[in-house]
Image (cartoon, rainbow, N blue to C red; front, side, top):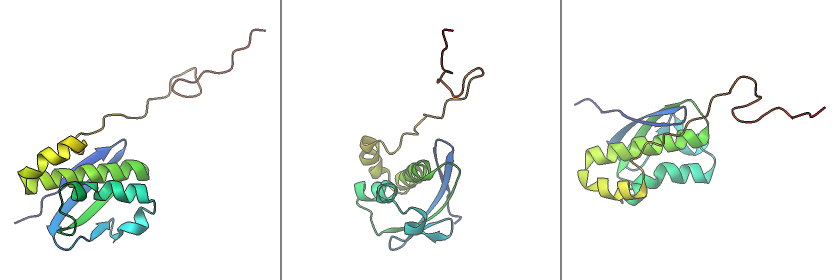
Length: 128
């Protein structure tokens, strides 16, 4: 059977997640998980679905992620892992839903408007 790819997105980041039964190894873009995400908060974000469903150490994750920064990538991976865990066992769904791990965060960067330096910032007003 072919391995199923689960997609997670956040801001401009796209993560593709493949879960296999194993002993908890996480490979991101072919390298070690700790090297790609040196910040502890991002690592905790990625492993949170495993902790909530009490499946830590049961699955190996092979992940490719592109675009955005570290926070967006970590949250995209989290969504992909959560979707994979629901597909593996439907009993995980209520636990992940309560934590908000199955919701795609729709917030994106607002576009820059003409006549302004940024999206909402205005140039300094001069009375004279």
